[in-house]
Length: 338
Ligand code: DGY
View 1: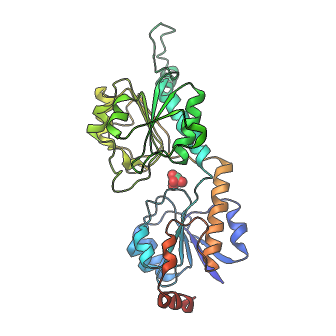
View 2 (view 1 turned 180 degrees about the vertical axis):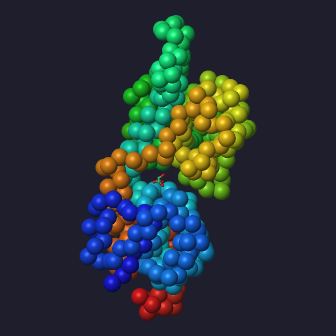
View 3 (view 1 turned 90 degrees about the vertical axis):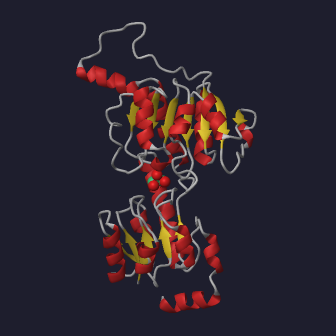
């Protein structure tokens, strides 16, 4: 029998799908880095299914060597995995693209609406009994119709957010460091920005949909925040470290921007000091893909990735297909081990 290790239990249909082909071990908690290394040394596995909070670096891959064939991430983002180190060791890396696009775009729009229309501040005043009664200038927010939504990172999720925004009468701007490719249905509706600074300066709402890489770490730093309009709203459902969170707290406190909606944080599950006290921040606990349907679809893709790896194939959603180019010697010794 072959083995799969999940750090946390994955929902149905994952267990049923892998049942026939593998023994499944579930830790049931997020291990520390050392714990995970020790676990993999003691109980070697073919496939590791980590969570967003598990850092899979060279040390973990070495601890899992030589048996590990694949790291199958339960999510679309795989910045927690050192893909170069995995490729060097002949380990494929799978993820779950596509199936969480709509759920994440919906959550992004929920944050956008809540931040633009000051729902959290309003909720607080109701619960605390502070609502003084209707007045002409109470909790005024941003009108979406006619406002420019600047989307940073125009992949699947960014495009899905654009489609929702069009239904609200927003204008769409897009910037992507790898170049904006506008799909046919949005062709006449998107203004492409060649530089981020102009998009930040002109947008009424900025929404982040870029992967976390060395070049997007702190992409939204103090300088970027100071470029934005004082009436603008910043939304982030991508990865926390794309924003310098300490600078964001200053931006909210000092009014460089009007509001933000966040689903992700620089040092999850913690937040930068002062962020929780900002009434202009709408704070969600990393629930972009958290619908029953989407989580099941992610489980299905993770199972498909794991089963392919166990069968000696590349996962259908493989982020490092170049791992196929293992030298014949490496491949042979891998096959002998299994
Ligand atoms: C994703 O799919 O990237 C989610 O943020 C969970 O990691």
